Length: 357
Ligand SMILES: Nc1ncnc2c1ncn2[C@@H]1O[C@H](COP(=O)(O)OP(=O)(O)OP(=O)(O)O)[C@@H](O)[C@H]1O
Ligand SMILES: [Mg+2]
Image 1 (cartoon, rainbow, N blue to C red):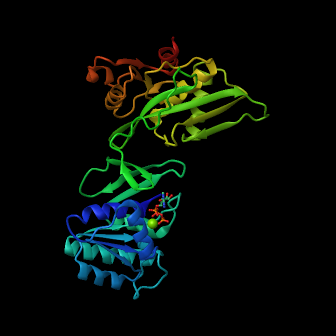
Image 2 (image 1 turned 30 degrees about the horizontal axis):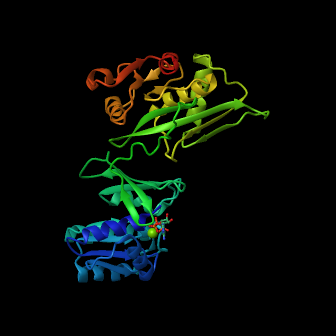
Image 3 (image 1 turned 45 degrees about the horizontal axis):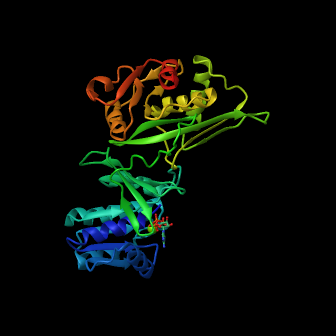
């Protein structure tokens, strides 16, 4: 995903103000140097050691006196007087506890890299979360260059910040304004697409949902989703059929996001519903329309967090009509000139508001 790249870059930046020690237990020093050359992360004050022994690392710390210590990764480090293999629960806990003690004693910022499998089941690193002050998740999709750093735990500050980066050949480039990354640019409106605004931490992000409903040649019609939660899409399909007379029946349904973004917030339900309904009716949602809201089993559109902030972001990006749950405060608090805010009670009303033209 690019952990070493991000930390090497961050380390080089911090090194402008004082010594930084980067411990690599996975790669050779030469390999890290190659990367540093590629991403412009070479700095006189950035010290590098390929080391896996805890004692040796502590000696390096005493020698370099860094203001920032980076351990890549904690699973490769072992303490000689502790049983167990490196990366095992016992070793990881001991190593993390020892490094925490050194860090607190010296008031030295310390970053530990810990790998977690997809289901988060590696026992070692999980115990880390209780030992450390801050837990950051670094996420990204294999097929996209977008990377996000998300705070999961923070003892001394907020957890609702997200950092967005573009991972390229020359390293990570911070994306100050990621909105627009997940929109496709159609010249004409196309049936089956709808734009929504998600909240990644405190940051609103525009994203497009696309759906295609077509005649199936199979006994069991296909239900294919990408970037969306398959069971939520299934639920929205059922609600559309039962509550809004959208006829889907034995047709194949494809639903996807644009640009590889994962949208799992319930607030994307309404955009999914409108994209599906739009594809079935072969009517397009006009350009400049966004939809936000959770869809309930009774067909109602439920309020979600931060609707005014989402609507404001959509307006900033040039959108002109927002379909939002009723009671979401977006109409009043926005007070904005260019944005028409349509509050809806249920999916039927939303469909009318979006597809009436
Ligand atoms: N020469 C290169 N040009 C462009 N991208 C590169 C180049 N070399 C590596 N990359 C990209 O950098 C990323 C690897 O980053 P990095 O090694 O920092 O990941 P990591 O999370 O530390 O991985 P690991 O868990 O194996 O340590 C990959 O996505 C890779 O495609
Ligand atoms: Mg690495």
